Length: 108
Length: 181
Image (cartoon, rainbow over all chains, first blue to last red; front, side, top):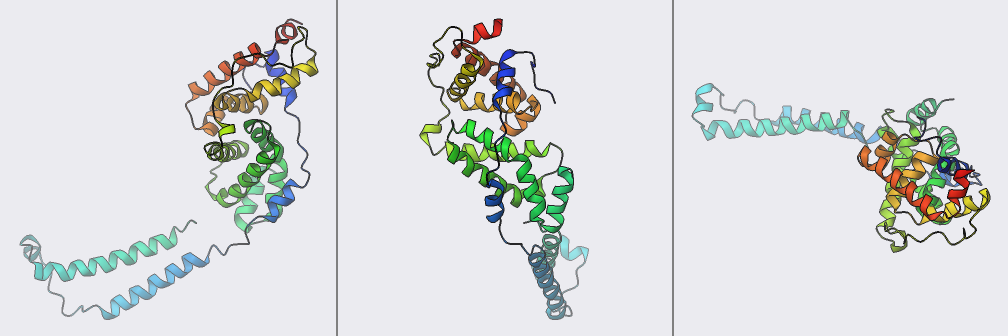
């Protein structure tokens, strides 16, 4: 950690020049300007809550009974009547997972 | 209490007393560094230092502890300076001409005169050379730490320190006599 070329007289001069600066109220001014205590837990909790509610509603309202059966032949034939409803389900589920992960990893 | 303890208290409880202690510890080097970068403008330096500590408060959770806390703070301070320097011509990065510092006309300058002249000579350096010298030679940062602060390659820092010191020696008329004593 020692500075390079310690024996250089210029280094000695430079070192001597770095005098301590008195605080003179500087710290007080900084502390007075600090933002109010943030409720950092509030936003992720809200997001997590909204995700939980969204998941419940999705489970409740999605027309699970009327979803066409998803099998390999339907996927391979790219049957849109089968694929579209399942893609919508995946989209809703993906959004909910993403929101849950964002809430867990919240970092303002 | 170590810096790490204080940082942990700030992060866990947003303890303003702990943060105040950190500010007290580092206000002097940060303000001095910024005053040198601002070519002696103490008001600007204090404004930038205040912004530096306020940003440190907001971003403390991003401090990973891999570098010294002071190194991390100097990095914020230097970025603050750079963003202001982009808008203010008087802080432009350009070198002032290579004429020797006028105050040191005496061939045998005293130590005090040399110190005063050194302040002037530092102001005339290119800001990247000045930053490298102030960090490495006045604040005891290693070249590696300075390269982190200045966000530039290690070789560039070493070159800036060497080149800056050569310029300082050239500009300080009485330096040759001082060096030989």
